[in-house]
Image (cartoon, rainbow, N blue to C red; front, side):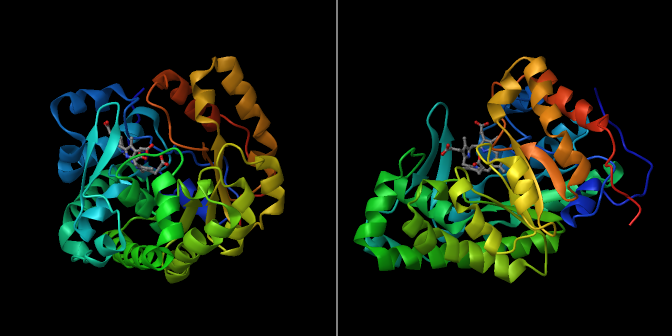
Length: 357
Ligand code: 1CP
């Protein structure tokens, strides 16, 4: 199904939900909605490297728009990657099929960190600004807001130290234990770069920022408090009055009270969190986003329907709810299952509370 522009001039549902206003139905978008499960993305990918796609604003814009055109999602997320920021610190990355990201050179010692220099973010990542500007221009006719994003400092630091993906963060944890001061210098440097990067995105016109601390949930309570939380706090603190920020951290149910205490505008819950409990315990001025298990979308439609039906009490009674997954959509997800979820949300019963105010 192809969705074309709407003629209504109403505030987009996403923006209403971010401000915790009642909406006739919840807005929906999906983490990693622009990507590998889409045949139209795969087609482009046959001809171009991932890097080429993110660095060419016309292609990045085309991919950003794909889930809007195909499904009618209520928000677009810029097609890019959290790792682009490391280029502003003089490192480079590439993606290898079946391996994932490879970061070069990766960091082994204190001296490696002392050698890092922050390059001008607005010059190095000018292509991101151009991709945002082009996407916003094209999104106008769909009246769909654009979400920008960044990795939180801990997650970015972990890629720089591991040199790629890791399920245990062994090197990062050893580095933190051996060189805690150097780790803080690294985190502060990334934080400064990220502030500039968010500034670039906000100035270009995104409506919301999703901050991904994907791997901070692998930390112990003490390490989370020492190495992840203060840097998320810096970013949320600096941007609270400038743009709504959604905080996402995989395996974060234990840390949700800490994230909530930062008073972000939106909490993006992973699929292990008890959404019903969170919907009643998180203060109603904080919007919540989530949290279907991405694997639910690989299951039969009846199962997906049952999962969605369970969301009804939240949809009908909790203003400030954004329907999303609890992590990124998987490459093997059938597109008709994504369409089913979007269609279900579009036809879902209205909120039982007034949508007038
Ligand atoms: O075509 C390909 O082979 C590249 C696959 C791909 C895609 C489509 C990667 C490599 N990144 C992306 C896009 C991407 N990455 C987006 C685009 C917008 C959208 O959401 O549709 C976003 C927001 C990201 C964010 C991202 N990249 C995160 C945080 C979100 C999360 O999933 O936790 C992380 C951890 C990354 C690193 C990364 N980039 C790509 C991959 C496969 C990974 C994960 C590797 C790993 O597991 O360590």
